[in-house]
Length: 257
Picture 1 (cartoon, rainbow, N blue to C red):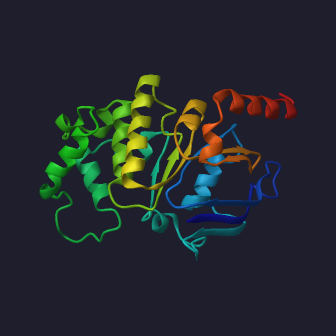
Picture 2 (cartoon, helix red, strand yellow; picture 1 turned 45 degrees about the vertical axis):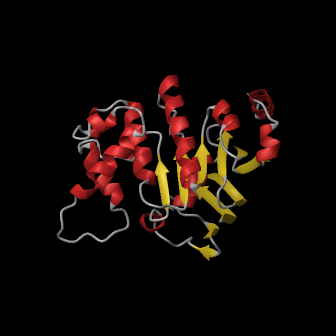
């Protein structure tokens, strides 16, 4: 279980650019949930992910996993149990290294490095099998630099890398936003399959309202640092894209847009 308890966060305090985002923000995510998160720009979606991952410091509050307060843990320590895929696949992969080398790095996540070779040849067949399972032909490009791949192929590799080792949480930060519609569909189907197969607790931020409705077991809408909508699986199944759009329009009017 993941809990954010009484989170406070102000950006640029004491300056003309001071922005108070979170004021006593609370959220609980149960094991096995697939939470989709929507909201306008600046609503706190990515900041919430950064708080969970330890990418930004909080002013007050607690980040709790399975009753253990990890608020003071560094981000690289948290990433032993958290996998994250960004909008930009270059943030989750090493473009100058080939596919096998990238997978090998992910395969050694959390392990101690000695003087042994970084690339384990015994794992080559495994890498080939999981790449072939994607259906993107990457098993035939294992020696290709990741930077030479298409955006969708790179994001597929990033998704594999994030989930190659057992993790407790998968964080998806608009991971289809930079892709064309057809490729985005492939990546979303792959995401859904991996989440279900690995039964990993997942939080996905997306601007695609159809994905927010069609995927996941829970829907949250963020606005000005608050979760103004929180629907469980049954309530979510009764919602449509038009319902979410109506709420967006209502918020927009209230904000004077």
